[in-house]
Length: 546
Image 1 (tube, rainbow, N blue to C red):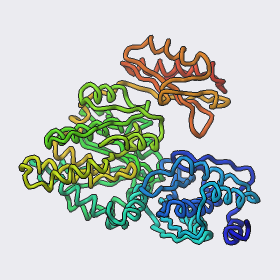
Image 2: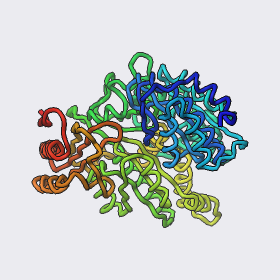
Image 3: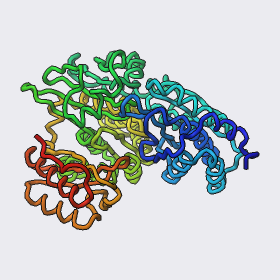
Image 4: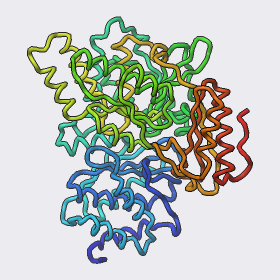
């Protein structure tokens, strides 16, 4: 066995694993303090090379910890079509990362044998990284892992996470999806955006202005590079660009969503649009201040609804009968679900939390729109749907109005990064829709009114005592918990609540919504107490929000 992997054996000793450290590959890959990750990066370079040999395609490895603090880092692998790593291989990733130094080659051989991998097959891996101070050395460890197994690598250096997903898909579709370069990415998205907005009437310079908070991350760098391609069709004021602030500190999509307030260092005049990326630019949320200084957040639910409204109108104009669905999680606001089902008459599918679950469900439809409430999402078009749009545009008998709508659809497809949620791509799509429809951000916000909600977490001795079903909307264990939640919900108007265990720490996450904020806060507290008493809460009882 050692003879089969002499270089891996030799190189792995230069990237030793700390004894006893255990990590779990989840939707977001591995994430922890950067100082614990060198061996993981090397081993993920090895695993990506194996995955490439198995699939006979290029695989991506992204070094990032997204919205985590700057001292953390992480890694995620990207499958051939730009999608997230298959669930089976997540298990292999965990197995390799957690093998003690002496057992690493045994674990490696186990993967090769289970997957019947032809080791003579070429391996190809694309690598990207974010702007964290630890990312350069950690991405070198990935490259070392690829090299140790004789794989070929391309180091893209600094990239947003969605850009690397895009590059992988471009490479594996032989350029059909686009050119696997940054220039190719910028040109494809920018040209589609310019084509979408060029015929919009009465669009003033004020309406073209957008304030962007880049979370002091990689998104700032890449948006700056892209600006020249947008040809002044969008005027961006860039804040938290990394020149002085700390990554994700009091800024970024996660901060804005959880704190329900504007990021630090940004002043938005009443009615102006602002948006925030997260650290690796795969999440996006919008917001504005009203004339009374009240902050309004437009999260993933609002984004999905806007996009759905726009696409449905175009499909009706051109007479295309496509199966359109919006995929949500239990965290989606009840008002958005009601609006989509009752007013828009579209299918709404609910999945477990985690983008991989939403992406998979969205693939079942002609057009699948998926966004988590945190702003992570995109739109997927089936091959058949794209072909129908193409035929419509190319058909010489199509009348002028239908052709115009068809071209809008075609450019909408091109501005979207279908591989994964992409803050830059989603931002351009939203800006195009608002321009085409002549909508203000207030009008967008008024499509429906969110039900007030509250999210809390309860520390428990062991989060595994909580088990759920129905896309995490109902608790199966511990006994009596769901009955307690049902009873508490009945005491509030237009209310619902659910609990789910954290994927990474011994806490239980509690979500509640109701007709008023006071009612939502009270319900969240009551459910937290039920979790504390029935699921082994630790520390003091949860306190009522002041």
